[in-house]
Image (cartoon, rainbow, N blue to C red; front, side, top):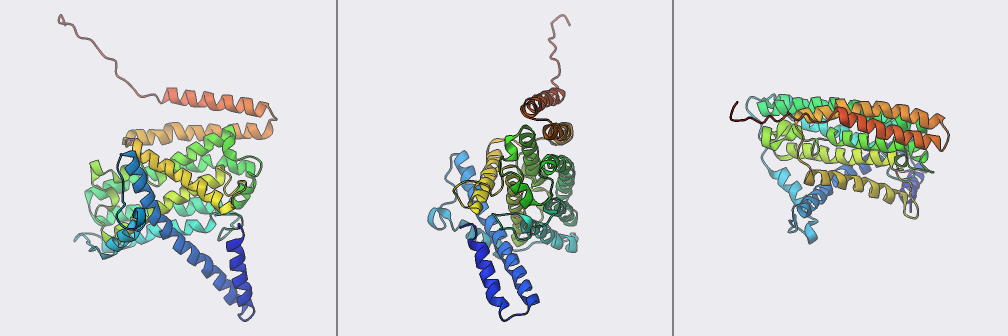
Length: 378
């Protein structure tokens, strides 16, 4: 079952190699991978919207979309038709080029990231030896597209949302990268497939340093994709809709598509690096991968349905005052774990994690002004 898609692709290429030149066979192999990823990205986005709307409706004691198709399964198609037929309105004073290019530039990296994600055993489009570095480099370019959209709209709310997004994404990229250092030290490779294979005996999340790194990376990932409670760039109650206020129709749909594809890729990378990726008993490897990824996506949806939006100072303070020092300490914990033997590596690592968490929590406790009781004599 694991090899079904791989064997199908190889069979097609073997048939073609009999009567086509080698360069054309290679080109067709690349095109097969590109086509699969180009179809997978929008399909994931379409039905993630349905899953989120259904889950949020249950949290809020509602039913959710259930009119279009059986159980509402065709609702994403209806939404797609609606977006395609809506009028594209461009503000008169907007920078037309930036306004037009921003939605395209934000979708391209979201699709390119899929190329290195191992969806199962031998099921990655490209097995780069620097796959993790590629993921981080490509995903960081969305910051440019978001600021282009805000600046090109010539709208104060959009610019404010874009500046918030840039500050937020740049801030959270620092602890995000540092949280990936421990698994790289243990696996000894930047290849995502090698990192998955290094977890054959134990998933990284089941170690003290791996648990801390997983939580830090996941929270940074939620902030990177502007999901609740980190959605200050799109705060409807404050700045209308943030950086995409002046977008409508299919251009707005492209922003929506990029957000959901980035949500999937962030959850997929968390599952790959910390939860063993496609590792698991009995079930096919690709099914294990999707189970873990969608479990993490449901946690993001749970965040949106239950947690209030953070203030700007709380959001920036979490990144610089808590997550950044915690990830730095976690690198030292990982180094001790690697060189110390059992059971001392477990005992000391757990103690260091607990003490570090308590100290940082104490240092970042909210300031509560002292209450003064006034008497009539005063």
